[in-house]
Length: 238
Image (cartoon, rainbow, N blue to C red):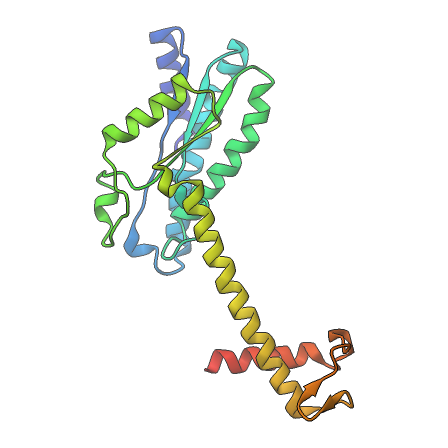
């Protein structure tokens, strides 16, 4: 995370090996006990390592690879960056930022014939995941991760390497569906409570024996926004 040190180390590597084909940047920190609440200082520390640590490293090799006109820059993110997860106020957003960064840099470096590759692993058994006090589905070994990464970098020309497949894009879509379903249910609750408050406070002429004229549009409902806010307050109290 210290710019001067990163540039110095990268320069030493360049001088020692002369020709560098692949740079693999994997920075990560995670403290589950501090992620349950909004701890701004903690979140800033996580971003300094997870996001800016990687960004500073990429900046240190930018000129080298663009002059070389070849090579691979690999950014390790996480499937936690796909969608918001519980108790992940710092880690998830930092990885999501890396995903966006990788997508942007992909186009920028492609002009110089340099490949940018994003690695999105699931749960891998490491000292960092050992901190977790919850069950980690499809937990894999570091050997498994290394094999998948090697295959994606060397044998396949893909932008993103994600594994295991059960927790990759498919798992993300399932999570997205659940989030959307929850959002829909909450919105429906708000709408029904607002309608209930509206019907109690103002019965328009279109209402007959408990039935509403189907041609009645929402824009015709007077003060609907205020009734919605009432519904939200009722919902929060229930």
